Length: 229
Image 1: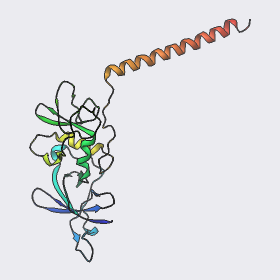
Image 2: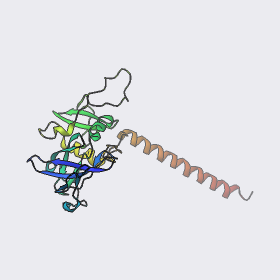
Image 3: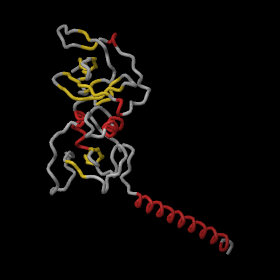
Image 4: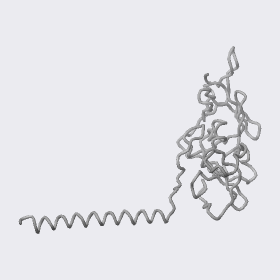
């Protein structure tokens, strides 16, 4: 247990370093230019080489994010570097990509793969799914009926960042909406309620409100008319 060294390898061969937290199995998003050599223990980041970061800025648009390869403690995974923040955008742990398959379905929309959180009607990037696309084997969690398809093999969509097959905005959206490096999600700004259901609910609320007002008025008139009898 403890904090160790993770290497962040850029497409041009440049290498930076990050702090690997073994208790959470994730790296920090802060980057460093150097590390301290092993001295009876593992290598560690050199805190004096911390690179300037801008965490208050928004995460860069998808097409500006840079794919990088992270290695640490026998683990390796693909992640994204945010040039606007000068920090890692994620995934900060290799468990993240596996977690995607427990919470998201994958749909082919006009030749591009998009992520849809389980039970929702739109993709993470905001496109409608109903009648528009075909589901691709990806969803792994056992929420289907017993007659449903078998769980799909594990698939790292971030490793397919280049090439245009996977929607980059969807992948970026999963990073922004996840709770932590392990990939636990709230509803990423989408609704599971169909518009017709929303309208029916609104009508019901108005009817109940009208009945409540009517009941109050009848009680008031009764009190006024018969109160003195």
